[in-house]
Length: 497
Image (cartoon, rainbow, N blue to C red; front, top):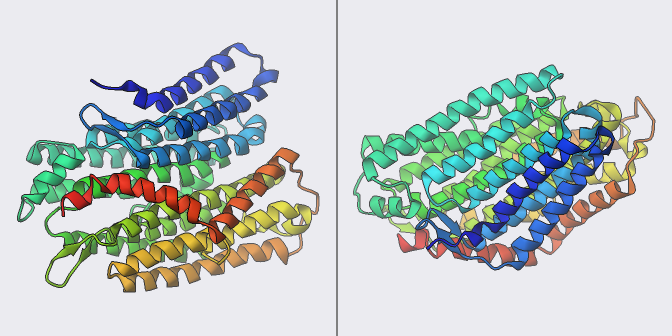
């Protein structure tokens, strides 16, 4: 019998979205400033439910799995949504219409993201991914009087629908040839094969291609810069952080549960390695020539996907004789999860800083940051700290997360790939320093003070503290991540190898 109490957080998030839509329907325009506070309060309550309620099990015979891995990503996604709501208050109030719809759709996308973290079956994962994507299509184009937003929405929905069709076509191949779409049953079927048929290879290639599009990995990254630049700034942050966290959760579970036992593992590893190298190098090189801050962060985000794909490629270590080992796979999983967590905190800090500047100036080009250190010292400090964290400099969470991830990949025998990652990180340091130069060295064209409320300053300080704590004392987070990894590995790749 299915225990639907396991879906309590998702039910609460869905209910919160409907509450926002209902309240918006009945209140006057002058009172709509209460909507983000309703969303904020509701998400905090849901955070408490996720932390305090111990829920583990599965639904529909393993279609949805609820374990420590699910709990960790649920919590991370809800907390990210909390910060997105907070950073969007003034932006939405001053620049967008239909406030209730904005927050309602944002919360609906959170439901899809949370379900992705618990999906253990391809069609369920696909439906969850579409719930996330459909809301994002609307949110990207939400600033309907802005031509860039309209352009971004059109590009995103066309390419997003195309990638979704590719995933669905791949799923149909897998189901037609293996007779199942559950990750564990796929793994059991693959472990009994000596080689994969062309149809199976095509199915997995199509699924991998669709997921790489959602992650904006090279060569499927072409949509990201335009969409990041044209979207409302809070939605750019949600695209950059929330959607990537959800897809990474799906990729980790799919590879550990379903794909690892596939014959020809060295060939699949080589494909992922090549995509990882291309994504790291091309993402960072193209960021060098950007003049728009959001486009720069888009290419930075692409490069960070390359770092994460390093970990995906290193889930299994292959010997020269074709033998496989999972001895250090838990370290790889820990590295991926910790890096995506550090990336989330860091990017939230960067975008929250950017949105304060954008709310005051209406500009998002890099030159608009000139003299920021005198116009708003706290915003300048947090933004530069976030950029240094993204570059992987010591003291910040980005350094520690890259260290964990690169160390795990090196232990799996891909030391040369770690070298490529280090070189790519050094390239990124150049364009981050160019932004820092504008902030601290260049003189401001407009010397007016950028106002930040006391509450905004508190949020900035919290994000700065989290970045520093993650860099100098990551042990508490790593212990939680280890529990998440243990729960997914206990029924994942170890039982198949």
